[in-house]
Image 1 (cartoon, rainbow, N blue to C red):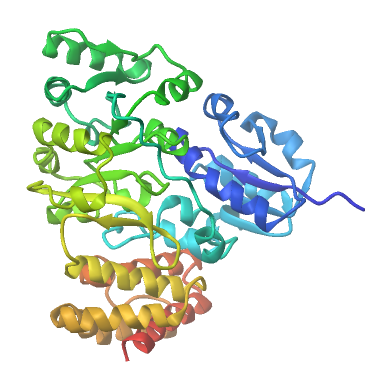
Image 2 (tube, one colour; image 1 turned 90 degrees about the vertical axis):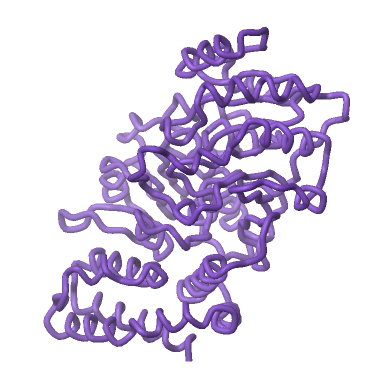
Length: 468
């Protein structure tokens, strides 16, 4: 029997992105039995993670000559770098997904990869996690939802060490040194033992935290490799962390996380993926979907008061479940527990409040794209539209009121190849931005060809089909 062709996956992003692709590796192995899976990534990231990763073949980007000598069953490009798109174009494969170079221009293959690209500056209503989006062009949501991940471990009550990961790729995504120093003090008051974590880049930050705290605290910043970190993590009752690569590693290895989701991140996209972790996010409107923050004051940081976080950490470390935690008062914050939706996809269960208009609109668009892009049942979209219509008729009225303008623009484009109003995309109502943003990306990806305009009209018709 001839050996089956490999499946090639390109992941050139940071450590967190690499770890978020691990579930996809499991699903690909299950969906394509017998096909070797090769992943091309940065050696600095994958080498220390290999003992913890699914059993695939990792190779560096410098192996392009070797990579090009083979034929593949499929190539999946999860990277945004031009060299990854070029490599996707140059290798021989039965099927290609993700960005590639065609006729001298960059194009994206795969409806779900195109959807992800449409989220740039437009993710207010997105509810699909990156780990799920990595795979939905390849496997069904039933395969995704059929994978059971163990919930994070709860250590015996006498274990009271709390890990604090201090840094993040962007200062806007992490608390200040004053916050961390005050949190250390508040944890100690509750009989908990804080431990500082970080890489070499966090050593100056940890020094400032220790100076402000002005007392003894165990500091591992710059002292542990990833393998040592995972071993030390076995002894922690909880890991408090911004949205970072180490957060994803902690969640993957079963360490219970409390994600302080602040700044220009979206926990629906990059929160801890496995069920049973906790996420805190500011409840202000702008924090409901954040890509770039124009506010230098970082107002979304203000509700994260160290005393309040220490109280919550003590309850989580003690093993309190969602019922007890939902009774806590956390002004200005929403507390989520990671889990799965009715369709088996990643979900953040809000423990603080009942569904509002934003949440119901998000659920509709999740169901609508799930149906439109071929991974969910049409009935889900109809049910969520009807719920939105009954609970918030003003939102539905706004969305339907913009349909005539959309129809005029798209019909004009179908005839002329151009928009009537080039400001249409920016001026679309925010509740409709998921649809108009995807339509805009579809047109760009299709070089504004007649076929692309037809597909855009079909999107509008599909929206009206559900709304009818």
